[in-house]
Image (cartoon, rainbow, N blue to C red; front, side, top):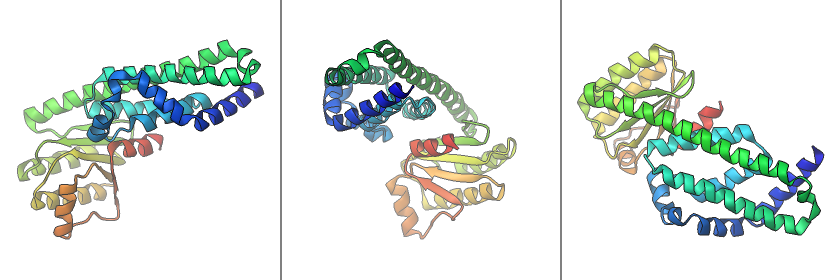
Length: 274
């Protein structure tokens, strides 16, 4: 056990020292993803390279719980922005190959230390990569199915797509235009639906809303106040610059009970953990 810990510690130090080499090799391996990195960052604020470093650290350290949580967050984020799954598969497999290439370089430096435990190391690392992929795809599929169902209801009867992600936290992902009529529907449905299961936190993702009239913004803020009165905290994510600009000019701001985060991924990281 101590040898495994020592190897993990030394391998992590070796990776951190050579992270630029890892990154260059990874981009060579992921041929199709390489040209999509900036596009994916723009679409969903998903930093593939930084996330690859994070995943490798979780794998080397054997942090299975953190790895699975990270996979769930990634699955929801990719489903939310409908990013091509083949890119994710290619990217993770490239991470696997690049990590083994780095381990091979490390092994040549330390010689006998890794050779003694190679088969155990192979099993541990590949199992963790597979766990990440499995958890990611299950999370993606589950959340995507929920989005499809709730968005279909939204089109059919203007239902509010409140999607539970655990017993106390739900996501309200709004897309398209939000006018006065739709805001009235939101007020009725949100207050009704959060009251039934007694939701403690509602993450309201507005990244799919390009713009809103000042009157609609004001109405939405009153809805958020109503949510707070019912004992439910509201977390706003994905506010666009156009909406923020109008709020500033109209002197509008959220109350201290309302939390704002830049992206849905940030909220998921915080509230999936809690």
